[in-house]
Image 1: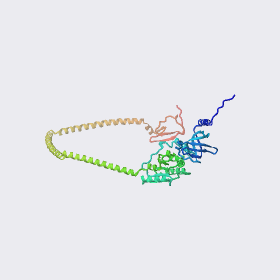
Image 2 (image 1 turned 180 degrees about the vertical axis):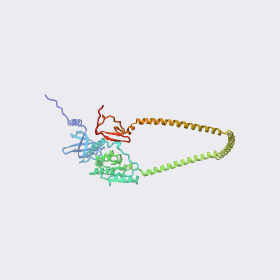
Image 3 (image 1 turned 90 degrees about the vertical axis):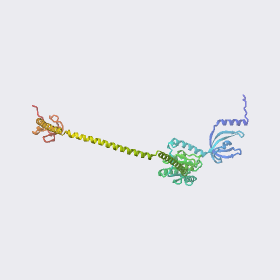
Image 4 (image 1 turned 60 degrees about the horizontal axis):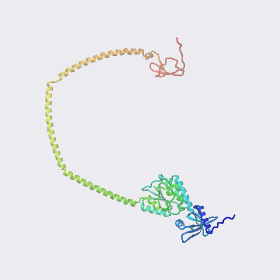
Length: 450
């Protein structure tokens, strides 16, 4: 059986293949070296990307080519993103480029993003670690190249704004081999010496490769560990480095870093002069108000005639004093007359006789009381002697006087009456009439009961 033939034209075939290529390959990244580069008058770019084993034709149309940040040229290794397509008139497949970047820069950018993510996870960018800049630093440290434009810009700004503040420059390489080690050592040296209140880590602008020393993890950790506030002034305003994120403050340029860390003495002097002028005006106004108030008080004082009023008060006091003296004299005379009359009555009715009689009676009762007390005291002493005799006859001390002794467990212990509780080697105390002594038991003799 003969099947029906489907015949494609070349145009149809290429269109079908182009559609399959476009659908079969999503947008992808390709890395290679540019060759056969052509910039058409239309603005489109045509080139080949090759590696050691093959090459592919590429095109980048005008709209995308206008956004390029690099200048394509033969021999440049690039990283491109785009889609696979087919140039139908010639039946050649090609790669349509939508984005192009330097392959080296792209690798560095990926490395930059990875390190940034790692350090951020470690907390090196945390806001709580950011230290405030001193308002009036005593000394400013600058870590940068001693021959670059950055150090000149920084010193010019500092000289213009605050020439009296000393500056210590720690010279380092800012790019190339050994630069990161020198930057780390300079930060640690400044932190160890503590000569400065604040540090500026800076360099001029450049490519990502030029700025890479400030994207090293060792530099980031040195900035984070530094006890001094650190300002990062690396590159231009559009440049960002890892040092910018770790530093306490990021400045867009080295000159801006110098302005951030230095007080503008000219502006401060102008502000101080303005404050002084305002203070003088304020003091003048206060003095004027005080003078006006004083004048008002003086006028009120004059209107109230205090001198005349005081004189009238003095006259009133003199008048009252005279009246008081007159009244006191009259009362003194009255009391003197009463005293004379009382003395006369006392003389006629003198109590001396009655006092002498009472004194005689008192003496009689005192003698009777003393006799009675002597009798009572004698009787009491007789009874006391009798009781003392009885007590002495019953006292153990009397027994001791007859040659007996008392044995105790110790000087103030209980009396030992039996041999049962005694043990050989035991210490006991023997009390005599005039003292006592301690002894050790070496033998115990028991007497059999009758």
